[in-house]
Length: 547
Image (tube, rainbow, N blue to C red; front, side, top):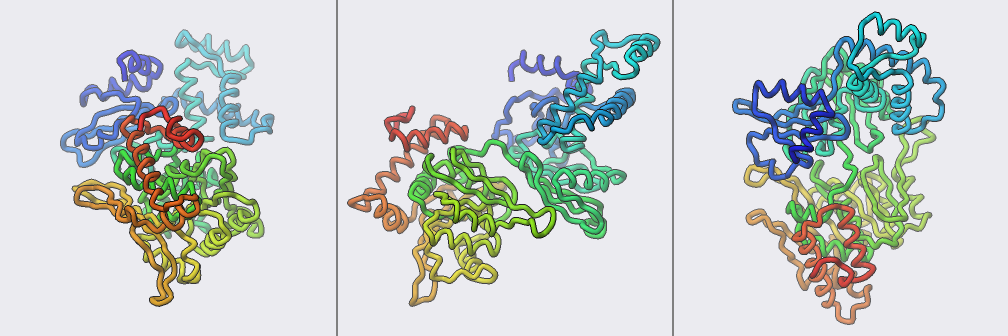
């Protein structure tokens, strides 16, 4: 970040200036970044600061003698005097709340708070006046307005908005795009999983005095109130983040605890995953062909292995004119296509009004989509998933399993109970894991397996390994090169190739396109989408890069 840019930020955010003045007595001033470089992960003693949305800044540091990295949220905080003004403004806001009946969304509520702040305050740009003047001024207005400085107005508006609309004390994390998970335990500092620095300890402390009130308020925001009688709640925040709250002390012994899985507004691109080594350009080219030609794919792995990230990254491989139907419990799948029917389950309110994933998938079969994407398949809805594949609808879904054998066992066993002979409706199983390598935790596609079908003689499902990760040199080997069942038998034949081996020429070309995009640093999700769709519409001649 340039010097002028930094000076402007400090000038416009007095709370940031005060924080920097305070820490300059204890440590070197942090380096400012507008985007956090991924290679800072290797830095044992980071000292950086970066902006989030609005007035919140994040300082991440570790000095010698510290066991762990500290994540310090720098946000506007109120003095005693400012809290009195805030309480007065809040009281006046609640009096006028009944006149605002047209508010339906969180953004409209934010806008309403902003409007009321303008109406209920008078900004004193001189920085203050005598008590007598203030009394007289307020008196003339009949006590209808509160005199504030520009900084006080900004701080009070932030404080009111974060409590009414935002995440309360967790608001800085809601604004930070680099957060994956938030872990809240009563009586402890909140810990986070940061996209660059991994597990970090924050300066936000959850006090026992108000933890239960806070957990109840937060549960109401996700539309699933908790109580002693209903101690566990699951839900989704307006931004799509998944929340799990355990409220009761009988269940969560230290007091209320909460886990938030942050929703990423812009998906990570397939080229970014290649650059990070999650898989290589060969795996991407193979998946590109599979999704173009309507093959069904399961992205499998354990919790936090990056299944949804990979799924979102490869969805742009589906041709742009296709109609896509997504069905989820929480909105995590992002589809860039124009015709996207996005449906969610409903588990709140009277039981007869509940809509389960199975109901949505049955509705999908009647709405004639080209591709069906259940965000995650867990149980009995797996039957409808296979029914969809049998009727010619390609399906992409995530599934908890660590190997192709476990996938088959879980689908053919109770409660899903798919007949073994139906398993050949599934084409490809991708296995992804979070693994430890040379002391680092990394996400890798361990294998890509092709399902060939049921073998009567051995009463089992035959599969073939297409790709395999080599942990020694961290590379992906194309085991099925010139020997792929899916490319040759399921794609080349349907795509009209006179010689099915020609499919490998197309595979090689797409692999090269992926490699060139990575070389040219084309990593932005929407830029990558445009490149893939340009190739569909105009071929390689339409691409702005040489192949």
